[in-house]
Amino acid sequence: RRLRRINTSIPSDQCGGAQSFSAMGGEETIELHETSNAERERIILYSSWFCPCAQRTWICLEYLVELGIADYLYVPINPYQVGPGGADTKTSLSLEEKQRIYPKFVAASPRGLVPAIEHRGSGDDKTMYPVNDSLVTCEFLADTYPDSGLMPASPIEKAKVRMFWEHCASQLIPHFYKILMFKGEHREQARLDFLAGMRTANAKMLAVSPEGLFLGGNRFSLADVALGPWMQRIPTVLGAYRGFVLPRTPEYERLYSWWEALSAFGPFARCMVDKDRLERNYIGYADGSATSEVAREWAGVDNTRTHLGPKETVAIPTLIQEAKTDTSGNPSSSLRRGVVT
Image 1 (cartoon, rainbow, N blue to C red):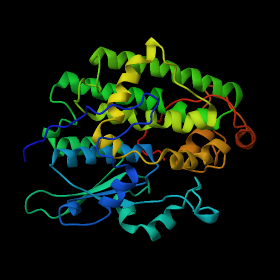
Image 2: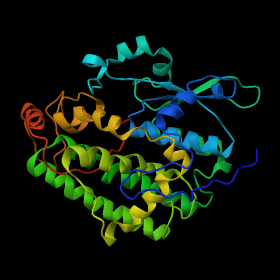
Image 3: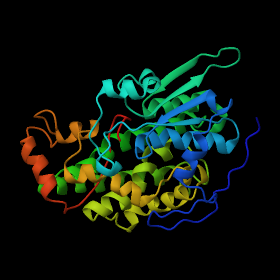
Image 4: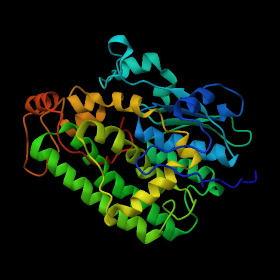
């Protein structure tokens, strides 16, 4: 099918409160795509509205909808226990509980982690093929729909997109969660590491294009979803819980101009949920009560290992108690595997 031109001209505010040209936010988008039809059943997305890694895949699917070349069915997954009064928690359901509640999801994602998709084969092949992990699902969509431009055709540009994704995964996202969960000098070190990673991200982006999305103008690609969901959470989560503000100085200016373009970009804006709701969802990381995959990875909830650096350890009960009793400090960063919620 012929691709439609995408309008990305609507401005956004520079602090993360973007306005979509379509006026449809994340909750409305989910509601729309929970309704099944024959076309949507070709691609089934298992997702959690609050998960930034799942948001990557969701945005890519919305982009394919925008182009008019695919549609999808949204199946909501809550991998956590529900708190009193229906409150969100970060206390994980066991894999057995997930299998009982969401058997098709666990069949598509055997570890019980979002995102996952099922994609119907082409032509006469009616098989639904499972794919999971945010990077894998995003690259799968790029490979399946090469005319979409999710991954550029040029090998050099492909490498730039992949190198930026790797930088975000290894040098940014882990520090984001460390800032939320650590205290004192360890939180401050995470903040410094995050800012250093953001300066490098700014330089990488500026070397590719001077304005617009990562590849320039309105050329949307996987590089934009590599960081976009966490950029959304900087003011909403890190700002709310740790008082963090990304400096508005020249060494971050390309990131700001990129964010203004991305947050006004229709497919991305339609996957942005209510910021107050998103803020409330992250309290488990801020107060130390989380037992999610990322909490176990970075705070060592169920073991004696922490990621504070070589030869550096902290008693886990102490670390968790500190997180519960102290919510002051500064924020930052990113995670390598695409399964964070």
